[in-house]
Amino acid sequence: MGKKHQHLTFKPAFGLSHRHSQTIFSTLFRKPIAPVIRVERFTLADGDFVECYWHQQSFLSLENTHKPIVTLFHGLEGSFASPYIQGIMNALHEAGFCPVLMHFRGCSGLMNILPRSYHSGDTADARQWLNTLHARYPEHPLLAIGYSLGGNMLLKLLGEDGHSSSLNAAVAVSAPLKLDLCAKQMNQGFSQLYQYRLLKNLKRHLLKKYQQHDMKALIGIDEQQVKQLTSFWAFDDVYTGPIHGFSSAQDYYQQSSSQQYLSAISTETLLIHALDDPFMTPKVIPDKSQLSRQITFDLQATGGHLGFVSGHIFKPSYWLDERIVDFLTNRS
Image (cartoon, rainbow, N blue to C red; front, top):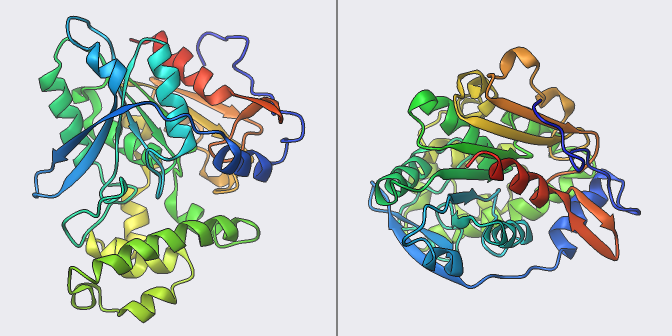
């Protein structure tokens, strides 16, 4: 797995040893410290747009330097407001990188133009953004970090592009490597609470699209039927799958799961995953034969989903940020 460092093994904060406490604390109780940002509206090939948030102080220092640029891809219904995004942006800036968050369509607070949205396997938008950065800043190393859904998308992108990737290194955290297994897991036990919270936002955003588009004609259900959807699988079966050209949720999950792309990755990549991640089961964990030689698989016993909170519950430290910065510092 490469060179060992003292902080490689994650030790949960006292009082946060359970997978749900790790997941919930990092989501609800991490104090966000928002850096000043510079917003770039990036026009996509189909006429839609995404908003990319640059760390302004880092951006202003790009000129006359070869500072590495790190693109961040958030998780499902994440955004700049997500504490893990603000945390890593600050950590990357302090370490001498220039971080920029590429919001997925409709996630920055502005609704995107088209009836479609974003999904776990949608690599086209990210590829266009990264290729634009490569052309715009040819002297700057390009790196990327993907969280959860964004991690799955990033791994799929790396596998699709192989040796032609414009990225020097990448990190994927808590990626749902097999989407069908994860969708089933989210509909069981305590994980249903996470599903309820995320699905509520997904349905709210979809319902807004009915005000601008004839969504019933496009996906075959009305607003009342949208409100009655109770699982990711149901939502993806009637909206995410069909609106993005898939025949069903199962077809979408099959084509978009990143596990099948891992062996084709040619970019040095770190996968960070917790065995106790409540968003998935250990069945998503790939065996060594599925990993390319360029992948470092950092599998921790604990950490939850996008958690990895160490230190003390009253003075937490965020191991994830340290681990990521350490990995990228040695590869840029």
